[in-house]
Length: 424
Image (cartoon, rainbow, N blue to C red; front, side):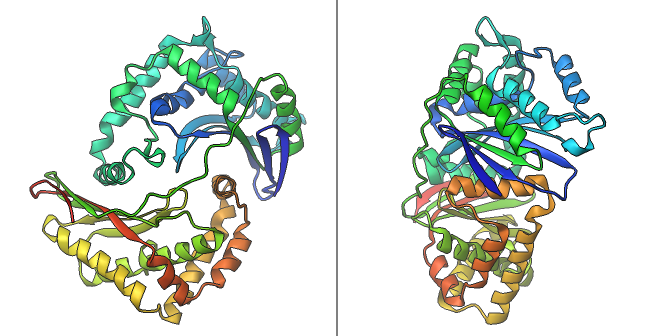
């Protein structure tokens, strides 16, 4: 893996990925995550991936990709803590497999640049018809959120947990704002993104020299003043907020959100990653074995940690009548891990499982991209091998220490019980 600066605020990361016959190039625009622009940020990639100035017709654009041996293009918007990332990607076969020796990486970079930097405008703004189509798609997605109860419960809990913090800005924007987004507003947001975003270019399996040269030449014609978003921050400790939303479903839902009250350094994050595995992210975890299997208090019970916001989460599918019992059992397992050292056998088994998962990072282009881009966002890039070596150094005392940092902030229930909204 190598990194190279192409311009002010523009870095290229080259990951060779020799084992694959395909390659992938992604332009990541990194911005502050803001409530005022969240819905525009969710809409922008939907509009960008439809066409561009060079190929304004979707059919014509599809033919261009087809000629590149069936290359595929996608765009998406994501939130990582207090940062919004808008990405445009293209994937296709490697140059060495081109039948006539075409410089495919160079062509991929050209198409990617056209889509990201020269969108299809009508009278200086995004096409109104295209925008209305994508607004309808986004509106339907937001309206359908409640149909997926697990996701709905987690999002409702997060809304209480983050409140108005930048960490809590919705990835897909806000339903009540979709209709009001105009082509002028979306265009203004786009121009501000091009001007101020830090750009991270991920080249995986493609010819990085061709890509870098092509994009550097194109970027020299773009006026920019990039600025890095503020460093990530964690939510402070608060008194636990217990919320019960009545919902007549076959299966109840429970989401517990904890704060670490800090963004951890590399060593402590590795410790918490292993602690999370032991507590609730493995099939052999305490939550699975004790709360689900032995006590039969839930259908599933999974723990996870968001390093860019300091949020720790346990979400579970439960019987309505077991809601409180499940919550108490989940918290009891956490308390036990904080007080009683993990047996050496259990610790070593968790290390083995976690390291095995890290070995699988290189099994796909997406896996490689997500791993290294995550490191870039956190400001510390490590190979999976380096991460595995750090995991091996963690002790039972480290597990106790890291889990003791957790403080419950929100307990959100979807149950048939009467609604409550209490701080306990």
